[in-house]
Length: 435
Image 1 (cartoon, rainbow, N blue to C red):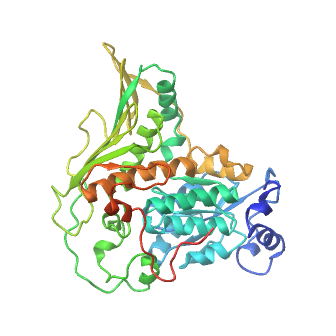
Image 2 (image 1 turned 180 degrees about the vertical axis):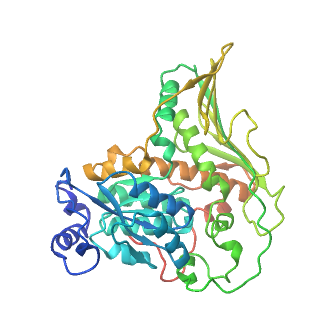
Image 3 (image 1 turned 135 degrees about the vertical axis):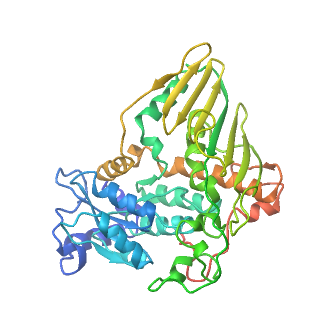
């Protein structure tokens, strides 16, 4: 760690001393290799990583972080559902013990864990991330990094105050082909770009209607709810389907569309917009969904527009590619999608812009070992802005009006209804930490 770390974090000195002296319990006894000492660049350094939230995305984290090299090991997993923890253990190597926890706070209390990744429902992302930073840990947080605008601002301030590496889960930022395509735009090879369209079109099946019931055996449902209001359990509020309820998720704009929004914003070279106009609703679903299946958002900037178009009732492909982004310039268009990056200049055939695959998790670990947040390809300062764009789209959709946005104060000067959606009420015992 650098020589200002003890000034930045009230936990850092205590944590380092415990890491160097605690030999009696838990992970410190398992012999995983040398700990990271102040200065942090030992060639034998090994990062001890924990995954919080072991559902589908959390198990992907387990695979990624356990497979990127000998300098990183997943040593702990956490989930309120014992079945999810069991599934996570099945994808991890079996040559060393892995700690299991139900309560994420036990992970943060363990000074032998250096980094965490967060793959919980959205309404937990910021609270866990900020508490982890205060506990002296570096953080990889899934998209969107925040459940509302206020939370995102808090997370950025925490990362800056304590100098921690906080990587956002918009992994296209680590793709060399996408980076090359963005550089193509930067070099002016598409001419002036005045519009980008972020497209999220796919088929997400209806979820039906689920009655209230008891939680599955062994599940700590109250802890799962956390900051959200206390309501009866239903299967539709549970694994993955929580995305479609405003108390826990951010709809598919924050779930999948954020990847396309992030690339569009990156390519346009813009931050927060001046105005948002949005419309959306349920043209396809007639079930327990609260979030829209159809959505159109226009984010207005001084010299360009960023459009977001979502249809969850059409399958791939429609615009010649799957979910992706189209940049429209004076000299042609640039498509970035899951099939690759293609530029089509006027009167020319499409040409692919290629590059090597890269690991987003690897980039995070490299930045942690260097103790240098500037090495992150998707730092929280960038991820937070893209998350806010998704919140703006959802807020505009929910209040059904064109909104002016004050980029300095992060509020809507002409809409109290919209401002109320910039934050939320938190249940007692689950409030956000103070910095």
